[in-house]
Amino acid sequence: MAFDDLKAELALLINQMENQPKDSHELYLQIREKLNEMRAFGMPLPEDLVEFEKDLEAQFAATKRAAKKE
Image 1: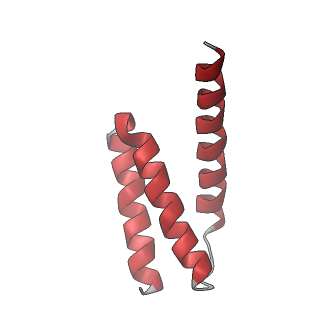
Image 2: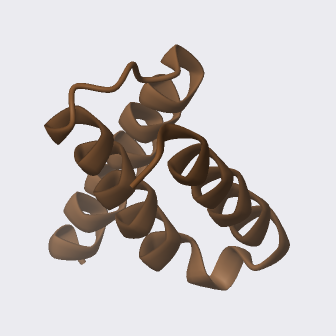
């Protein structure tokens, strides 16, 4: 898959995440999958998206830990 195609898909997924927060975990997984594809092909990763991925991962991990405590 071409780098520009992956970038376009990531932009679409981020837009969907902003418009549908109830589906943010599924969209996070899709963004993570696309970034992993880019990594596998040795493509450069946009730093802002890498940071976004880390932030979302931390957010979902914290939510999961909080749910376990309840």
